[in-house]
Image (cartoon, rainbow, N blue to C red):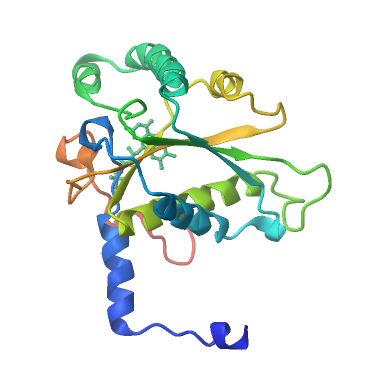
Length: 218
Ligand SMILES: Cc1cc2nc3c(=O)[nH]c(=O)nc-3n(C[C@H](O)[C@H](O)[C@H](O)COP(=O)(O)O)c2cc1C
């Protein structure tokens, strides 16, 4: 235990982490290979999730692993329904661009994972003033898994164009659970070097000076 807390990282290790962070990408359906993900890799991804920080060490997460194609098809139907509605939120050029985007990989990905927030029935240390902290903790777990998957050259895509209540129904999820992320995982032979939405000019990458404020807002 004491030894573990003495772990310091060298420059090479720091560079590797930076590389993984910079090359993490959202991978969508057109880039997943069919090969199933090994149990060893799934466990490493899950362990990364379980190692995430959580408010008051509450670990308020549950992970549903989905291999069944029928379940994926039901979730895909929810995506199609929600995406139909989403198209109408955009107008003119953006609408035309939106229609062309591939925004999920539910049926193509060998593994889907629904990640839930499971609220506690008692006060949680650190969550007494800001009730969303538990949900943010689940997002930390998702990010850990995204990075671990990337280090294993496994692509992950986050699909949020879904009706969360419909997904809960499909998965028989307990009523108190809240869907935080619906994730698609699969091996892939290509990772973009930049966000696909940047390459396709949907939006530009913000610069540090645009988002960092020194001391106070003026
Ligand atoms: C909370 C969250 C929800 C997202 N939902 C979707 C989605 O529904 N469909 C999609 O194609 N990408 C989704 N993404 C991926 C983003 O589009 C992507 O992260 C962003 O364009 C930057 O690209 P990168 O992750 O490859 O760096 C989501 C990402 C996050 C963090």
